[in-house]
Length: 317
Image 1 (tube, helix red, strand yellow):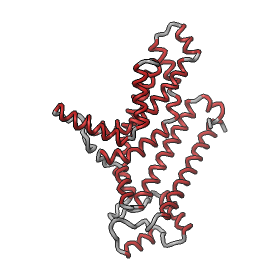
Image 2: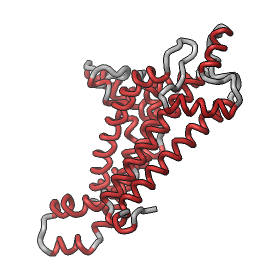
Image 3: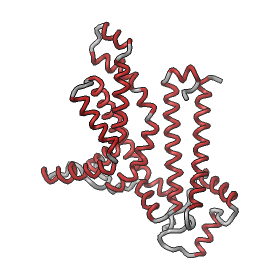
Image 4: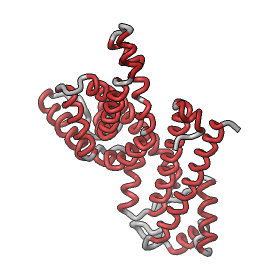
């Protein structure tokens, strides 16, 4: 068996174990919370509650409940929302595409702008361009996304509308093109800052390598050196953090979706916490956790194919 195949099997094994641990922790935490999974803001009849307890095995011993719970999750049954009775899977099917679109837009903004800022900061090191890029990065790291979102709503949504009389950027909803820009940028700001700082450091290291000096000695233009040689190698560390960045974008969407009144899954999660809707909390937690674990797995596998050291060692720990 080749090193690469062993590396892939190893990473997939880690992902499966992590998902199982996530399900076990979710089950445990739900049982530690006060009340029961079918306690909601409105009381439901005892007969209905008893039927639900039987359906989901909550009338059985704890260990047996756990295996029933795992079986239900693996079969795609995440329970029903209380008190409206909607299946959690139906809520996810309806709301997650909106959150996914927001996340993809945010990652595109973060990746493109962050890479460009990092390149400019490295090439113009010590100049006002470098200082401005790193100042933006500092703001992105220090200021929470909900504050960024509120500032964007106020200045680019409200004040710009008052100054021009035209609604260039909508500040609420998720229906028109101009309503999808501000929330995506607010969510992208922190990730953009991380990428730009990482890209700047990596670019500075690459620009001091011998092969860059050789390319300069051959008379290649700076544009060719930057894009054909430096960026290709400097971007490698950015790929390694894409998994965690996906996690930060999706978890950050909870607050951003509420600020901009976006009907995404984060909005349902926050509402379920506020109303003690345990089934929605556990279902969305498992769904989000599994999604993020798989996202990190994909990044690990991609890195295993593009990093020569993984080819030689069978895995980079």
